[in-house]
Image (cartoon, rainbow, N blue to C red):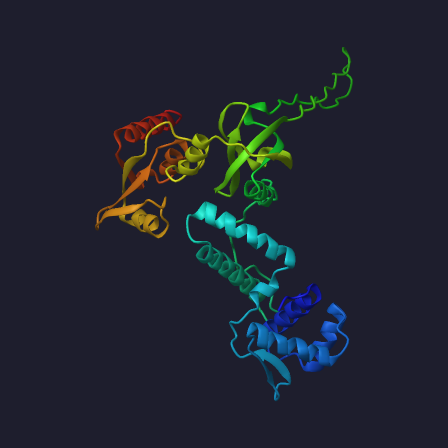
Length: 362
């Protein structure tokens, strides 16, 4: 049975109250809360909502007569889907496609994992903010702070453009196009033997160049989003970072991508790490890790092609099937002395040159 927006708001409030304050809200008190927050008109309406939650969504709502309050017979139960707004539910439809395109696994499995993380996060927030918590005066949960942004709002727009096979237009600022801003001279008192220094104003940056793209796919790398598509002006595929895009819009013109370009882009990212292209062939990349870092790499594989060749008390050797590129080189360098690149010889040489250049700076 479809859920109306008003019913959704009531269900979410009831679920939140029962899960956070088990056995502490009587029917009257719960009604007064719903009346104040959602405008519910009668206790009978509350009873119908609870019954629908039990029947339609299998909510294990029970009533403790001794404590005079509602509770979940299964304390772990949450109406997770009802914690999301209708707009969030629409966004999940796009998320399914994003997960399928970027994670290389079935949509159902990936979406289940993502929703489970949301559920766990909500439980953590609820516990940390609990009125009964003696630790409210101090921070007890530390997580890595991430700066979200990078025009992530463009992701569903671009997915829609790909689905509808329509071109997009946007303005794009390349790294090398960043305009140097003249430094402003501070106002200082007039000198005895000379005029007051002139004040210079910064040069306003030029408007970014307008681009037209036939989008093919999106890719997320290290919390940054990229769109890859066919650029008719250059006759080849191009990659654009969303964080340097502006004024994005979907055009009425249909996409017209040459079959060779479509095939190349579709296969490209199955065999590279990160986002940068590779001018070399796909090769067997054999890496030897220290035992400690070997455990990390096994727990969190570098790439879906990863295969463990040997795992002993002295080293862990893995193999990847990739075309070496700059992003892979930078990632491998992050392992420092815990990694030895064994093959291919070209990548071994690149690592030596890169490390030598780094050492020369000290």
